[in-house]
Length: 170
Ligand code: 9YT
Image (cartoon, rainbow, N blue to C red):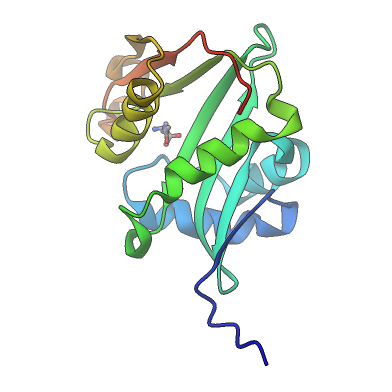
């Protein structure tokens, strides 16, 4: 008899019906910009090939949303990386990123871009160690400065990280 202890982590594409639970995950991170539930449904419907969910025992514990830049299709823009507070520091974000890059939809990707605010240490570590481990160049430019955000939101700067070029044979 096989007993499913629910400890195995399953990585899969999101669907529209995951939108509400993804919204809850993003809300609970406390560090990411919370978009509308509709936005997460839409990503699950129209951008599922470049997004990924980590699930354990039926619970969504990790999520990456990303899309290929319409003007530069060799660039994967990684929009949000989220891991549930209870599951951090286990390499889940890094596994999600690696799985994502292995997808057919990411074939030919040579650059990764993301904007990451200074307080989002987990994502900074994720992208910089991804680049370092593989000896891929990385640069940081201004991105979206705090002044671009509505005055009453006191949003941090969102510097843009660019990693690449690399040969995506993963
Ligand atoms: C890589 C990542 O998660 N960036 C976050 C961008 C922005 N602050 C957002 O959408 O939360």
